[in-house]
Image 1 (cartoon, rainbow, N blue to C red):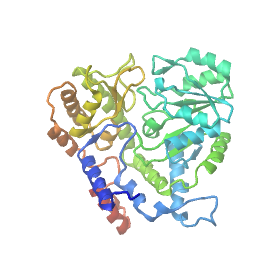
Image 2: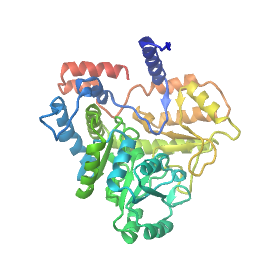
Image 3: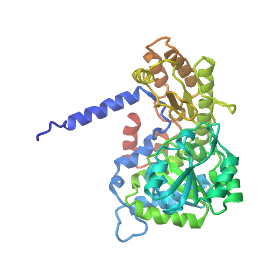
Image 4: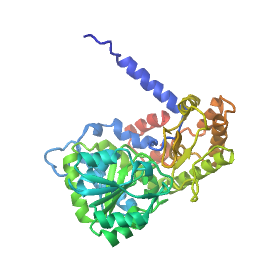
Length: 432
């Protein structure tokens, strides 16, 4: 049967349409961020097509030069920022990282505790464990957002699980691993505590939140493209050589091409976080999230909060007005250039809710002024006020014209960067 499949012009047209919309939109999706122009360079260089096996130096030689970036720069700077003795950067994504961590730290037939979906846990964690032959039980939660320590005490004493895999993809208040570790040490000392910090890695590595290792986790890691504005990649960090070896033995077989260009891009991202204001970026994310939540609430827009406040991370949960068609409202916001993450429900919220993040708008340079303007815009749109604020959105977006907290052309030129790479960087920067 002959199919009328679109051709290359259709593909290019859709790419152009996407980029046009991206340039005039503001994205509030918690699982997304934006690469710096320099961190995009590896993806259009030759190394994008190359393998790097440091174990087989005589077999795969095409990536050896670029592979030095991983061994001599990425791994040392990640160890420093994660406050870890050992890191593994072979995971290709958050889910791939989760699979490696679970397989490495919990054998088939053993038991693992994980955060239930109704407590903010990832929807796929239990399914991955099941396919690996791992039995899962939910971490007991209190008031939706917090661990029920007394019930966890009893559960650990009764089950003695091999692993507590603490992951929250929908969260407002990052858990303190210290509390969980104290219960583990008391009731099940052989249990490993792993923290999947995919959503907060940018805040952790920049120092705005403590390293889970300093708070009792045996290991932590996850994806690198949420609050950490890096490529789609993953990592595991630990101070325990036995856990390092267990993770490495699984990663060796679960990952072959671990995407060298992404590893180099991640190295660039971490250098820029260190040298171009990463601490300010992370602090600003937290400030912007709290200011946005408080501003909407003051304007009468329902925002999820607890006795602890609105949020202590990048996420803010905003409720559409009662009786509103949330899907239609989400499409209307999309038409205005506001990209939001609509969920049918979230922990403690039994109706549609927008799970929003201040990380990407902060990465574009958003400050109090932009947050206050966005509060005004959302308050109008969510309260059935004015229904066309595209001009106001465009005004805010014009002030968020290029990624911040990263190197620019003049800085790289002053460093004497190769003219060919500098030219490539400039073209990418101009189209950011």
